[in-house]
Image (cartoon, rainbow, N blue to C red; front, side):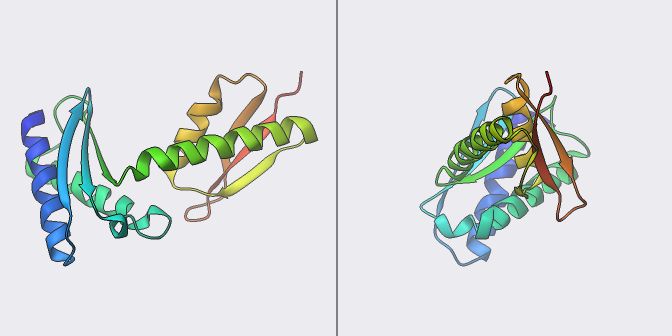
Length: 155
């Protein structure tokens, strides 16, 4: 499936979801490299509690893109759904949390368990702390209670 088709599908599905929910919001679709981002403007309610609604809509949009395209999008395109800059704000908050947990783990000399996170949030924290050099990260537990642990590296 071409990136143009992916972009138009994301636009169409997001507009349909916003309308079906009886909400008012403007949909904008952008492509940056291999990421197609559909953003819903003027609609903080679209995010949902702890991002659950926006994550569910992102999964739905991706599944529709797969179905309509008969398989994966062109190349390794990723589909991201955002609303009011939620994804960037959440990434910044997770990075602050990761830094705090890493500092606590080093200072206390023991692992620090973080709260339950989605797989994408755990991945973001794993990648963020990967090159730090003084801590390691791993996930524990089973979904939906899977969480990330930050542990000091023993030198």
